[in-house]
Length: 535
Image (cartoon, rainbow, N blue to C red; front, side, top):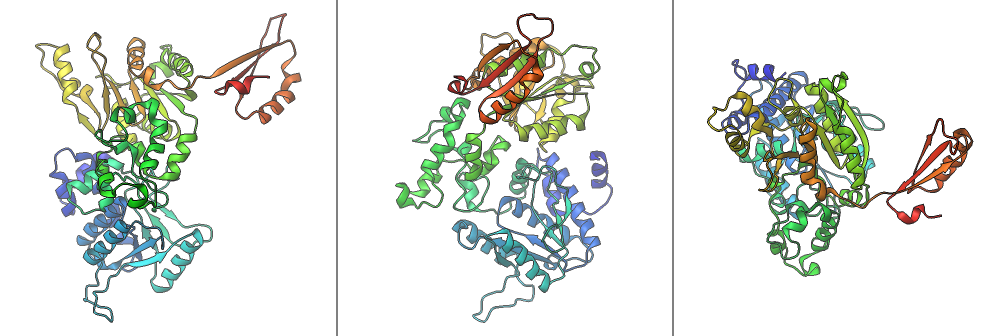
């Protein structure tokens, strides 16, 4: 597919100004490819639908900004559709929008959505094409769409939805409405874009965006459910040191401290601090390295994460493992240590060396578990495809890291680096590198992309890399009690079912034993609450 798009971009097809600008920006090749694909998809949709039947959902957020400029760019090169044929709609909260967001939407309405004929209101103000629909519930949304369809032949709403948005993991780029909604299509051209893609596009093309993103906000909701992202707190902060923010053992308190400093809806006088001074403590949104923390700006999401049990998923990669030619040692090692560290491993998968299969599993696991550990497929040979697969999973490109190239020069003194060495230094964009201390002989770094820890397949190296982060991942331990019972397992089934229903904080396991004269079943009771195991 990538080859097809590359061919299309050089075969004399339409040239889009924004795409040309992206292509001219070094380091944005992957985003440029996605941009061209989105433009082509929009162009095809413009071919299918008649002018005046499409609307653009514009709420002033970063995704809406990207989507607006993509649609406008596509319309500039289309034979029948003009930008003015697209109806912009603001589904607006009538009471709880950020003032900065309202101001930005109004600015964009004046710059992007004015009537071409220069129409004006009775009091002489220029008339915008932007419709505002007040939404406080799903019922309002349905009624608003029905009202729109009375005004225009609406067949499709273009949205800036991305697959990493809540509930959108399995969404298609084109879906039809259902239930009580009026009939229309939802079109999501940037569905497979990452958080980084959106900001690379906005920054490379120098597109205006809401000023809230410059002051620590990464995902905008209302003033009641949105806070500055704790992950963007600067090290110079007077109230929270950088080492506390970055220490995984302190992450559970970070949302609380952030809320204490920045309570949604609280004025500067009420918080006891000037808002401008508080905003200066945060980095801008585009500096967020861990894309999985994008929605840490949302208060509801933060509260849920703080209460959830942290879980781990393990993905073992390699044809030799799945064929049975090589016995997997990494899975059992990781399972044992993660359990000892207080992390609940609830999924272990083994896949062959298949780019799409690896990417699909990593994407799914990353959204399901707190931590994901992969093992295998990061060497220089043809079947080492884990790094590009993980880049595909997160919708980012590969970048060649100079610090890894420098390590290769040290490992291979006097040798000329070739394409296979470059492959080893090319890792998913935005990855962290965790290195061992100066006393260690193994200088090769552990690669971490978002919440995915990318381990080597060689057991010795896998273990050494895991030990680099083990102490930082230690959590409250599991407490275990074992009961040895000389009864047949079927006779205990009803009792165990009732016990598990009554003790939600205790995981109960039953294991039949064959050949013992002293007991027939071992019952295990596991919980992080030691008092829950007491009689």
